[in-house]
Amino acid sequence: MDIILYLLTIIQYLYQLNCWLLNFICRYIPLKQWAFDDSHSPKYQKYKIDELPLITDFRQDWTYKELIPYFHKRYGKKICPIKRQSECDIPEECSCPRCQAPKPYLYKNNGSKGQLSCKVCDAKFSQQDNRFSAIKLRCPHCGNTLVPKKDRKFFVLHKCVNPKCPYYLHNLKKVEPEHLNEAYGKNKYKLHYIYREFTVDFFRMDLNSLPKNASSLKFSRHNAHVMGLCLTLHVNLGLSLRKTSQALKDLYNIRISHQQVANYARTAALVIKPFVDNYEYKTGTTFIADETYIKVRGIKGYIWFIMDAVSRSILGYQVSDNRGVGPCILAMRMAFRKLKQ
Ligand SMILES: [Zn+2]
Ligand SMILES: [Zn+2]
Image (cartoon, rainbow, N blue to C red):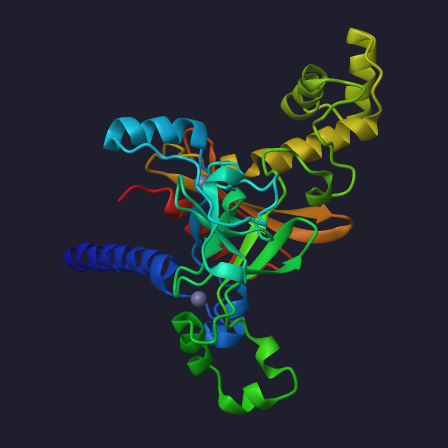
C-alpha cells in the first residue's frame, strides 16, 4: 500500500515539474522557426525606425507692432526707423519674416552679400528663402538640418546628409567593406538618419490604406446608425449577409445590399482590431484553448483561441497556414502578456 502512495506522490511531483517546464518554455524560449539569426544584421536596419527629429519652430505670434511698445516699456528703449546715410535699394514691399517689420526697420547686415537684418527683432534673413515662416527639422544625432529627399504619396522623407554625422558613421562601421564596394552597395543599407513626415491624417479614414470595398466611413447613402444596425444584426444576432439585408428592408424599410453590409463589417473589424488586441481584459485563473480551421478566400487556415474560462473573453489568438507548434505557442504568449505579474 505504501509503495502505491509513494509512486502516486512521485507522479504528482513529475506532473508539476512538467507544467512548470511547459510554462517556462512558452514564456522564455525563443522559437527557432520565428527567430532569424541575422535579424540584427545591418541589412535589416531598413526596418528600424529612427527616433524623432529635433524641431525648431520659427513661427511666432508677436509682430513689430507689439514688440516696439514692449521693448520701450520693458527696457526703456524706443526703436525708431533707421536714419539712412545713402539711398537704400531694399524693395518697398520687403518686410521682416519674423515680426513683419516694414522696410524702415530693415538694414543690410553684410553689405552687398544680400543678408538683411531686422532692427526690431534682430532676425537675420535673406529675401529669397523665408525660413521664419516654417518649421525646421534637425537630426537628433548631429543637429544638422534634414534635407527633404523624396516626396511620396503619403509622406515626405527627410534625410540627414551630413557625412560626419555620428549616427551615419556608426552604421557605416557595421557593414562589411566589400559589400559597400558593390554596385549601389551603400543603397542596400539604411545608413543615414531618416524621418518620415506623414502628410496623411491618420484620424481620417483613408480608402487607400483599407482593403478593397471597405467603407470610408464618410457615408454618402447611409449613416452611422444604419451601419450600427447592420453590425447588430450581422454580428450580434448572427444573421447572414443576405438575411441582414432582408431584415433591414422588412423592419426598417432601409434598402442596403448584402455587399454593403459585408463592407461595413469588414471596415468595423479593421478599425476595432487595435482596441480589441490591447484591451485590458480581466483574467481569471483558468484559461481554455481551442483550435479550429477557417477558410480565407478559399484557402484553409488554422486559428487558435485562448479564452478565459469564466468570462469567455478572447485573450490570445493566432492565424496560421499550418498546424505547427509555433503559431500555437504565439497565441499562448499573446494571452500570457495580459497576465499581471
Ligand atoms: Zn523682425
Ligand atoms: Zn545627423
